[in-house]
Every structure is written in structure tokens, then in C-alpha cells.
Amino acid sequence: MKLIAGLGNPGVRYSYSRHNIGFLVLDALARSEGVEINREKFGSCIGRGIVSGVPVILAKPQTFMNLSGIAVGKLAGYFGINTEDIIVVHDDMDFSIGDIRIKIGGGTAGHKGLISVVNHLGGPEFVRIRLGIGRPVAGRMTEDYVLERFSKSEMQVLPDAVERACDAAIEVILSGVQAAMNKFNVRITKELNGEV
Figure (cartoon, rainbow, N blue to C red):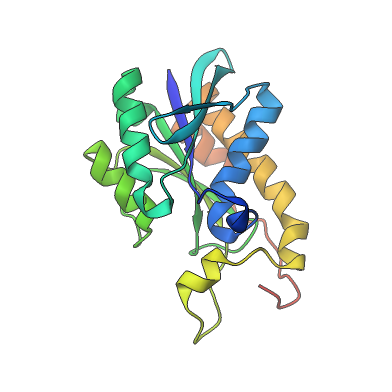
């Protein structure tokens, strides 16, 4: 069994904010795979289904971003899912909007949601699907930037990025992390007319 957790913040206020791109991917993946995310368990909205022949739990932690690991850790423990069978989908300021990267293990680059997940899983050896959201211009607070909604130009790029992230998660399950990295870890974005 695999656990796929998309990170974000609960509530309408945060819908379509940059920090909630993990939720957007989980919703899209659930739709494409016919999984209903309609139960609450251990501080998450979850759905159970089959992806590429493998049983999966899709989870959207409702503990707010900085405490995401509480929900992820409890789900992993309850369902007996090993750390290497967990996929975490999250925003990443190191890449431009539209770019995605897959990695396993490594640091957190100060991402508080990831820090929480690492702490509650007891290590970093889970798969990450990282979706670029770009960086704020000089002088802008990071906290404000990630909680703002995507700009108009970003919204034009967003659907394709979300779709590719869903494909990346499926590829990880179907072919393994290395094959998925070889296929998806390529830069494809273009400038967004200077608007980020």
C-alpha cells in the first residue's frame, strides 16, 4: 500500500494559494483515478482506492501546513505504511511555477510542512513531488507570498503542472522513483511575462 499526501492548509481562505498546490494535485489525482476523498481520519481527509493496480491512501492533512507530519505520521502508523512507500506532494520555491521535480530523501530547505513530516516519520526517506511556485520579489515576506492566491499568469500554467504531478505520482507507483525522476525531472517552464 502507498500513502500519497498533498500538503496544504484547510479552509476556503487558502484555496488556490501557492502553499496549497499539494491539495490541488490530490484533488486532481482523486478525480482521475476515481477515488473519493470523503472520510476523516487522524486529522486528514482521506480516500482509499487503487492506482496502477496498487492500493493507495490519498490524504489531505487538515492540521495546517506546519503540523502536516502529525497527520501523515498517524496515517502511516495506522495503515502500516513504510516511509519509502509514502509520496508527499508540496510547493517548492526553488523552482519556477510549472516546473516539477521528484526526489527521495534529502533536506527540507526550511519548508515547515516537510520538517514536520520528517520529524513525525522519523526520517526523510519518503518520495517528494515538488511543484515550483517561484520566489517573492526582494522585500516581500515569504509567509505572505506562499499564502497568496496564484496570479492570473500562474493560473494559466497551473492546470498542466497539476496534471503532470498526477502523472508523476502514478509513474512512481508504476515504475519506481528512479524511472519517474528520469521522465519528469526536466525544466519545461517559460517566463510568465514577468508576473509571478
